[in-house]
Amino acid sequence: MVAAWVSILATHRLRIEMLMTQIDAELDTSGLNCPLPILKAKKALAGLRSGQVLRIIATDPESVRDFKVFSQQVGHALLEVREDAGRFYFLLRKA
Image (tube, rainbow, N blue to C red):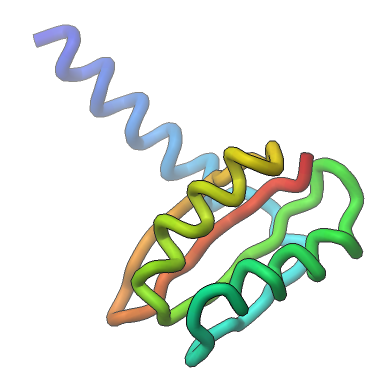
């Protein structure tokens, strides 16, 4: 029972942290397919300082896998991945 509450509280804390994350730049790649969302995100991140957050909006379902791999390879923190009505939202914190 205690473990369940700890898990619930951790999940809610993570959601609150994501809601409170300051977004420094936004990039809408709706309608673009691989590799364009990644390439545009890479260019947008180049203009940010370390620690700043880029919000990316995409419609390509493959972008979920692409941004996970991209963040692991480059070292940026993928803070959020969510889908709403066919649009995918990503928060990336620049390394």
